[in-house]
Image (cartoon, rainbow, N blue to C red):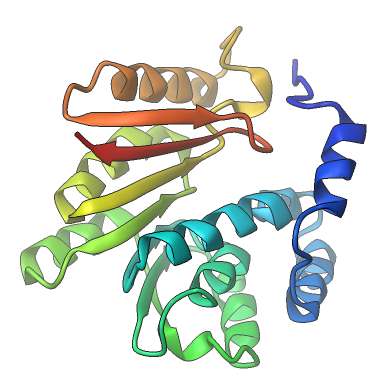
Length: 217
């Protein structure tokens, strides 16, 4: 059974007192709903998008890695806070979502900073590690829940010394309290793993569907 994480009236109040997203992203939300229906709820949305953008700005990030792009909403939010020579590498396996995202990247003033990798994200992460390029200042994980532990461990190896890993959906509509389905148990296992990880400090925020922020100790 799904639970409401915060009171809907509080959510609406918070949205009214959060910086609005650009018109291009409002259009992207509408197109995503039109093309993907109920799956459009996978978009990060205003609150998580602005949180990610603020993290990029506050940390002075120059390189960002995103695991799970979908329609590119969060990628655009983060890219907007990168410097002109910054880079955001984003991964997805859905050709339809990639096509929609790239259409809107082409219309964004920040789209030139975004590089899309189509294919399994763990393969992309392995290739990035092998290439030994500059590490990433922020890694955002928002993909298939069964691989969250694998993404997390790979992200730690790619993270800059003062970098942050942000992980979405860690409250999973409240189903972490009474897990039944495989994805419920995957999120519970992931949260427990991070909580027991002596290598990191972390905070689980009750923003939208739950966001975990992790840094090295």
